[in-house]
Amino acid sequence: MKRSLNRIIVTCLSVISLTLAAGCSGTNTEEWAYIHDAQTTILSLSDNGKAVFNDIKYTYTLENDILTLTDKDGNVTSMRFIPNGDDQYLLYEKAVYQYQGEGEPDGLIGYWQEVDGYLSFEFTENGTFREDYYSPGYYFVDEEKGIVKLVYNDMYPDTYIYYSIDGDILTVDYPWPVVRTEK
Picture (tube, rainbow, N blue to C red):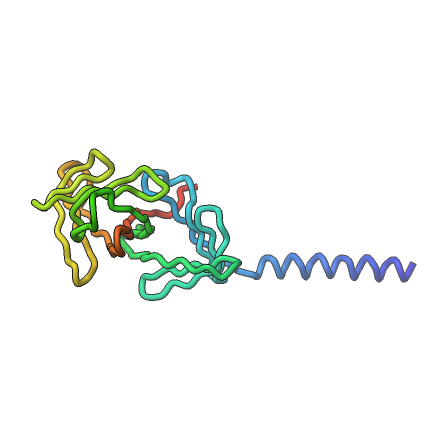
């Protein structure tokens, strides 16, 4: 009888300890979604240094508006994660394009097709551009800073992209507005 009572007490204390430990862990998680689909989380950042981006688990650091994600194999991805008003950020995701013209590209001028994708940019000598075949506008380049300002002719707001060119490869950090996930 005494042995049974001791087992019950030990079991109860173990359950209480586990419950308290779980309740006191206090891990806070921020969940972010693209502004155009605020119900679908694409980025989770926990204060314990763990993150999930596009359903892949990472550890992360966030310093000076740079989000650095490290996967289980040690591969590192860095993205700008810049505040853009109340509870909104710009998440700069990388996209890689290949020059589709003859010879070597002359800076940004020319037609660029996304590698492994369907997106594109076309930049002209007279300062106009077309994104993804149908979004036209004007562009301004700051080569020293590696920034292009895209001024769209239609409903899109002006956008700043970061870029680099290596041979016939254009790498773009493109900003996607993200908001807290709606629950």
